[in-house]
Amino acid sequence: MLTSTPMSAPTQRQQAALGLERLAALVRAQSWRSDGAPPLPPTQATVLRMLAGSGEGLRAGHIAVQLGVSAASLSDSVKVLVERKWVRRSADPDDGRASLLRLTAAGRRVAQALSSPGQGMDRLLATLPEADVGALLRLTQLLVRAAQDQGLASGLRTCLGCRFFRPYASGDRQKPHMCALVGQPFGDPDLRVDCPEHEPAPAGRASDDARRLAASIPSPETTADG
Amino acid sequence: MLTSTPMSAPTQRQQAALGLERLAALVRAQSWRSDGAPPLPPTQATVLRMLAGSGEGLRAGHIAVQLGVSAASLSDSVKVLVERKWVRRSADPDDGRASLLRLTAAGRRVAQALSSPGQGMDRLLATLPEADVGALLRLTQLLVRAAQDQGLASGLRTCLGCRFFRPYASGDRQKPHMCALVGQPFGDPDLRVDCPEHEPAPAGRASDDARRLAASIPSPETTADG
DNA sequence: GGCTGAACGATAGGACTCCTAAGTATCCCT
DNA sequence: AGGGATACTTAGGAGTCCTATCGTTCAGCC
Image (cartoon, rainbow over all chains, first blue to last red; front, side, top):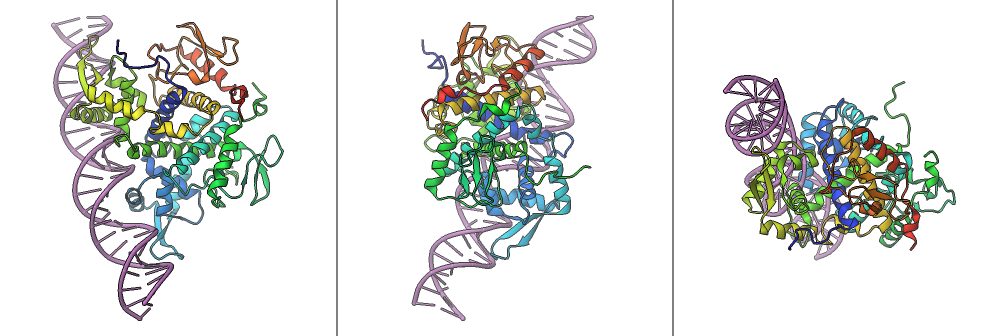
């Protein structure tokens, strides 16, 4: 009998991989149809959002690394954004070979519309209870971190992998983690994906943090209202 | 009052949205570099995996809907797969307009290599503790379900939204849910993304299930081993 | 100062993905 | 049988992404 699927029940990992892949496809597709805001191609939208989140401009290479695409690919997208007058190149004072990308006033307006509540992903996440959003945030960080470790992307400025990050160091249940830079406790919901103050941690420490964070489950307390 | 960014600290939702978007980009980029297996373009890989998971072939429209792309887009990808002799079209006995897509022997080999452990997403998920994989599975289902509700994708055969799904109906902690079709209890890790036996539930019931599942947090018991 | 190798980034050429619009064949309903 | 809806394909065009190559600049070295 040679059944096409060797096991009757696929493993949880396989199912999760399928789900994640499907979700990724939908997330990307979402960008084309964002109603209300101008329907931008997905990569362009992402670049605009990244620029909006970083006051003084970003280098092309930095963005390419964060998205896991080649410098050439990114150059394509930037070219279009420049043609549309949403992004401006300016010289990087620190490096004559590089240029800093900044939003123009028009670009800032577009970026604003993109990340306004009710747009894109935000609309999906609004359907989740708060505790789940925190859990999702933690999981995405772990996975992005894993991707980093495997050389798929590097240079992401997440709390995980930052030398100032102290997981479960505050003793506070609601805000268990600490940022050693600002000296303040914070919780899963406050984990940053692209923190301007980020400084990379030594490789060993980062993996260790990841393991500690991974072993925990967000505390049910925050769901009190069931 | 209409402030652009009301708070200096980004909300958890915005951070999660950023993380999800970044993760989606990485997930997609991953496909190009899968080492060991042939580096397939992401959409083609996804289609092959879907076909591998469904014994008797799928209709083009079904796949398009699951991926959230237009029928025309999907037709493009299928054309390439057929040219490469990995997929074969055969007549759908039930509908003369449609054709069923099936893997050829060669296609089956490729698909197998793609989903073998250690490939693609599986490698990322292997870094997570088991309980987190379960949590991720649940979250992806909720989000995919939310996407369905918003008309971004329909036709996905997830447990959520299936008329046989009974969340938290078994009383068993480890396997709290029930599938009314097979009459067996199962847990978060067993939730299906693309179940062949799926039958859609009435709209109201589905949303209700989603809410119940959303309100819960995976039980820490499954992590016993810290 | 001038040379060399590495790094940043742009361009060229090609493949893949995705869209809308329009066309063909089939199905289903009246 | 006729008419509208449905499944799918084709055509045309834009966006994304790759590798390979090139020009510029930086950093280290003579």
